[in-house]
Image (cartoon, rainbow, N blue to C red; front, side, top):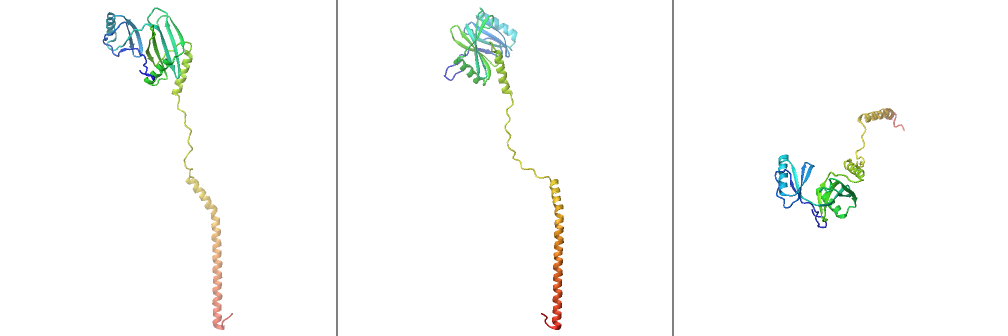
Length: 258
């Protein structure tokens, strides 16, 4: 895995057997054999020779029957190991130094302290998170040999908490989880573009009916006045016609009457 400055992350070389049947011959001894079952580790054993490797191979064949997951990695004579954890944007580093004679630093007595995280380890965990899938919570274990060489050993998406800041780390992880699971905020509602509702037919008819009822007396009065005007006009025209006829009659008998 290459970083931005073209340097490589020093991953510990590992041979992985997802369904173990038989070991391939390792080039050098000692080696460390890890036996896993799913996401849970069963145990580790240090093998110093080919004879010991054959004994472990026979035991795994009887125990696993082809379903055992096994990893083989070179043995690193540890000076100490580092646990680098990432929760959101916060990165912490813990140093663990074994003070017992066991080759495993997590067995027996050990000294644990929190130390500042250097920029190189920040690049390691950031690049690994981006490569795996942008994990917000993860950790890596770095083995540091007595010669000072570093090896990135484990990458974990389920982290173990260390030191006196465990409660703070739990709260930060819980807050991050709540933020991820929280429902998205509601968008502001847009102004309604609906047309104003028309009056219901029933109300419109009633209103119209009221207008008709209010207009009925006016229309009746208009009709009466029109009839009266027509009658007066007809009477006057009738009177004019009668006088004209009398004038013509008298004119014919007695001459023109002015």
